[in-house]
Length: 343
Image 1 (cartoon, rainbow, N blue to C red):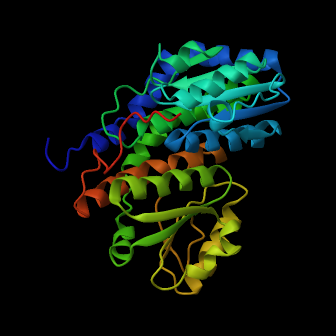
Image 2: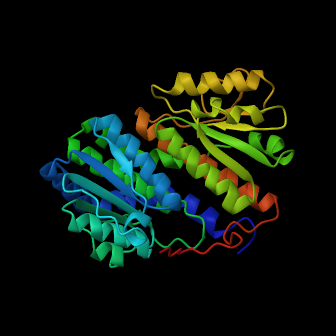
């Protein structure tokens, strides 16, 4: 394997194919999950996950709230594994997201949620795992083997699975068409070049990654990838939240990457990014509203939620290249393992 053929790069390139495989191979299960949610008619929903899977859960949370108006909360796995709290989840649907399906604390909370009467839905890349066995509804995200430690295609497929279930549950034809078109849009996103980010990042060692709504989930995932693959300090914030204190660090030596989708938050995210650029910060923005900021290319899918998801694909390609440029191996981040089992 040459330096330009890392596992991470290969897996990024596989995202369109992996998405198509999920929609084909797990199509019946996704419809079944939607039917189960319709039958349950949950008063609220919860998510259980860690790391990149938690960022996929955050994406699913926003998609559900925007589409159904029902609240979605993230549950801390330690509630069951450490604190032994019995939550009242009889009226809830509970999504767990885990590439490996093996972390004991996540499994413990899923079991507790099921025992409490919650409908448990597992999104995992490992059928037959403990998480799979302890869940009511089981979805194989069908990402295929992921050899790089940093999750890429499994993150994307987890989010796509959540959107597909949501479309089936709500009988939302617009969302269903948008999800079915994602393999084509992901292929277009792979071709986008974000190298304009490099000069600003090479001069500095920290940045903020901003977003709002579903794009905040993308910003959170991007910040993690900066840290784990490129040893680069990045913090994700809502573009509104950054104004409540963190903005004090932003100056000409502090870059800002703002993820804006074609949705109701685009004007807000872009406005804040443009304000920071006006203060002299090297600012990069995925919007045609960029004037003071540097515009980064993006794919328009015709749906606000899938627009946001497509932003992660060119970023993944960029950060893999940044990792190698900084002398790291993106397949083997320091001090990390592919499967992390927490109690």
